[in-house]
Image (cartoon, rainbow, N blue to C red; front, side, top):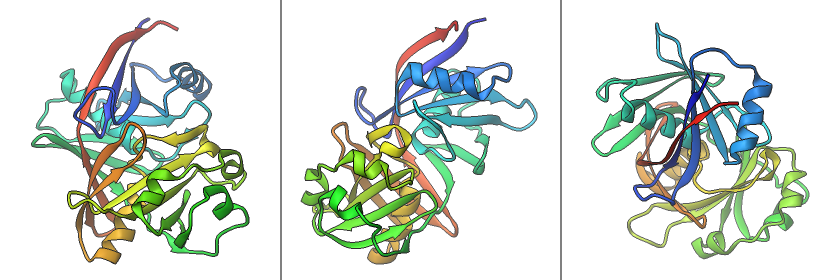
Length: 264
């Protein structure tokens, strides 16, 4: 039986920008090996697998081409976008996703989708052997979150110009490494990039889950609860963040670029 599948560019209002994700809508359970094989076939940074629970929202899982991950922002935003766009969920209604990271929600707010995610603030650590050499960037801070390392660079240009050694980063044994700096543009509060060779993605174009760490980090430094981050990858993307206790609200736009059927 054919399975509906979509490709969505997330955290952007312009097709072929932001972070692409596949959204696969299943009407019955599938095993993890099948989902991993589909994600490898799609070969995007994330493929989201949705299944209607009927009584309370949707089950949601995320796979890179290499592994299943515990949290993904842009593919969750893409999933909510598709549910509303296809009429599977009325647009005023909240999207509820049951995941390994607990209940996540999405709401349609004006021209953006706002996600409710758990905050994941970093704790300062001594840089592990090889991290700074692999990044090739002078840093003023290194911290670690549940999933990743966070390094603050001295300038936003250093973030934009970084050319890390992905092989060395992969050996650090974490999901990814983000580098960040205060923005030199008034419309943004901070800039960042995210490298995840350990998850099969050298550089992720726009990483919602990384902003669960970036938001509390920069919120404390800047004395703000609401900020705008720019992820300075080649495709680029904008993430609006709002701190709410131990949660982070992540908001952005999305554009559907492909609709099809999976017959495997």
